[in-house]
Length: 174
Image 1 (cartoon, rainbow, N blue to C red):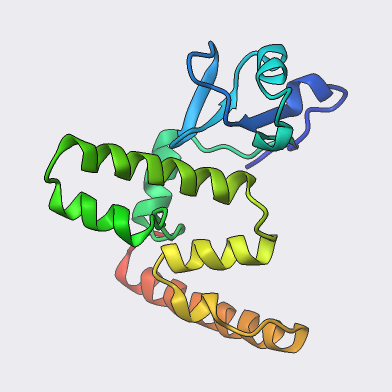
Image 2 (cartoon, rainbow, N blue to C red):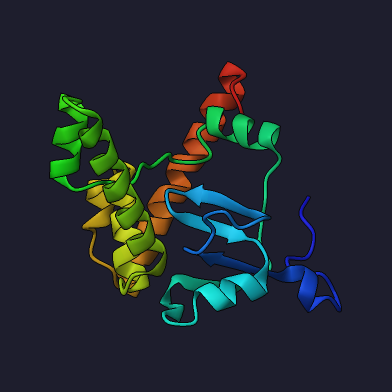
């Protein structure tokens, strides 16, 4: 069971920052290519002084223990998605002709991760991009209206109930 997302009375403990200024920064953890979580906030602020667009603040977070996440992935609770890098980087990666190709792929992955986290995409566009990355193109292009969403939610709930019943019968993960 989860607890409160924001620790009562403790803004300082609940505040998190995602940023692009973590190279060599003590306490910063790279969570995607070129995207970091945490680290010394004063240093991040100094590094971001000329361009603050590479910093996002979050109040609270949800986290999973490694074993819990592994089990949920194995049970299909999550859909895995990879960052879709531009076609040129994918071709260079496939060819792996020189070390330069791998470097180009790494740069494109960093740009794509930064664009998804800090770019000007609205939430809907970012969500559609993530769905396409997870191989769910049909849902990415699905029309969004309150009526369609209600019908889709009902359909997904029915599928989930049917899957749960099948899993109970077969003894699979719940």
